[in-house]
Amino acid sequence: MSLAQKMACAILLLVLGASAAANWLAPAGYARQYREATEAPPSHAHWLGTDELGRDRFARVLYGTRISLLLAPAAALFSTLMAAFIGGLAGYLGGGWARIAMAVTDLFLSLPWLFLLITARALLPLNVSPLVSVLVTFLLLGLLGWTAAARVLCSTAAALRTSDFVRQARAAGLTRQRLFWIHVVPNLKPVLYAQFWISIPVFILSEANLGILGLGVAEPMPSWGSLLKELEGLVSIGEEPWKFVPLILLALVVTSFQLLLSRHEEVPA
Amino acid sequence: MRNLQRKIAGHALALLATVLLGGLLSATLVRLAPGFDTDERELDPHLNAQSVQALREARQKQQKNSLVRFYFSYMTSALRGDLGTSLSLGQPVRNLLRDRIPLTLRILSLGLGLAWMLSLTLALTAAWMRLSIYDSLTTIISGAFLCMPAAVLALLSVLWNVPGSLAIALIVFPHTFRYSRNLLAKVYSRPHITAARVKGLSEARILFWHVVPVVAPQLLAVAGVSVSIAVGATIPVEALCGLPGVGQLAWQAALARDLPLLMTITILVTLVTLLANSGADVIGHVLQRQEA
Image (tube, rainbow over all chains, first blue to last red; front, top):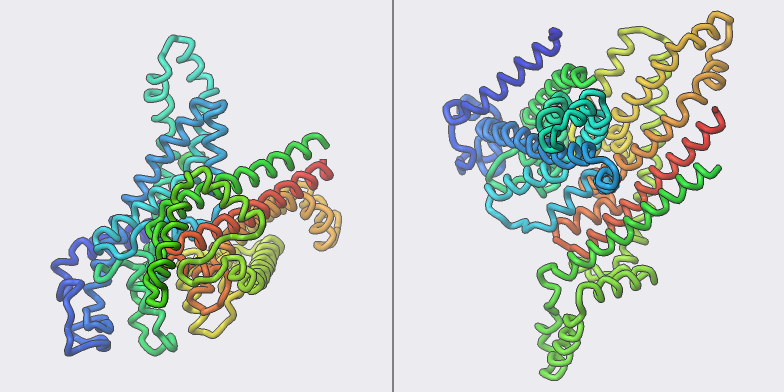
């Protein structure tokens, strides 16, 4: 592990630890409104100031980070499992199954990601409770984000299907099911790990995009997307620089994931 | 030649399947969407009981249509150019698209042109200079843009008062730069390029005679993908920069849950990206054959 990767790991652990300890570190809950101090600048009481409703921005950043950092990996896990099931099985079965699965995958891949997301999001009710909106947003990311990984897994499984050891195992009389679970799936693991890590920063960025566009996590629940929406009202960058803290945090976390990713990308090769 | 024809036929089939499947999906969603079987004109106090009854009867006749029949009528109307009416804006979708497509096309073409110019310039200079500092610097710059949500770049473009096309260029640039830099670095490290340099060939000659023919098919494939990225970027850029294009229309339709409009835009966007990818694939195939 290089120095940059060690630093990335440390940053991720620090951010994750701080967000996990939000209940103790934050001066108040994310929804508490200090009506006497709306749009307040940073002070001893409010380290990052307050928003237009008087909510402590530091508390919202901590809780928002927790939501984004817990649910993006959960969505990534869900999409990786879906990709493993669809891509892995299609590649292993081959023939018509693989062609149909890959045709559907290609169709999904040809559609711009954000168009697909907002279309799917619009199909679901927009006026839902904050908790439901969090689940819907990340479930959608998981449900729609499997295609690229499925393509990679399909080709890997297809290569495994024609490999010598699988042929030998088949010749030895192993059933198709046993062959799949004992010989194919374990060999797909490195690719699955890589796809899981690749998906996390993609989902974090997608949630941020949806949040800024007003189609993500509903108020008062904070997420990086909804926190970044505050930048919309800025007139100049120097005006209220503390509003950029969520953006800096997001960029740091995504960069850290990208740095760690370069290590995981080496594994499947 | 037969191979090329087969490739073109495959792409045409994929386009046709997209239209048919996308149409079926749109028709199903529009037919099942809440509010399909209601007509707000019934609330108009100017209408008398007979008129309201006539509206109800007309709607009941429409409801008797099965989904399949509804699909066929939807598709035949679409083929005639009638793409339905927007629920939220109350205007024909065709008119809305006709008014907004030129602006989106202008932003897209400018953004893509800028992104490619920037990517190729940086990738080529990195390959020519072969300086690790320069290589690291360009990687850090592209990495920084890669870690920014597209919507934040759109917001920053509003703050700095720069055109939306530049925001699209900065969203597309890190993706195209990464591929072009890796591709060019790989080709420039080949032995025949070193031999050409030793022989004293100019960099321009090496580029146009020995590098471009090799990298063109791959770069074309990336160009196809970059169209898809740029089209996706139009939503945040147009929505947040206040540009009345197709991306902004899609965003407004999503917020208003205007399914007929949103589905039509999605199908059109899919067709555009599929056409771009298919075109890039076919041209790349032709170039590869010529190279062979």
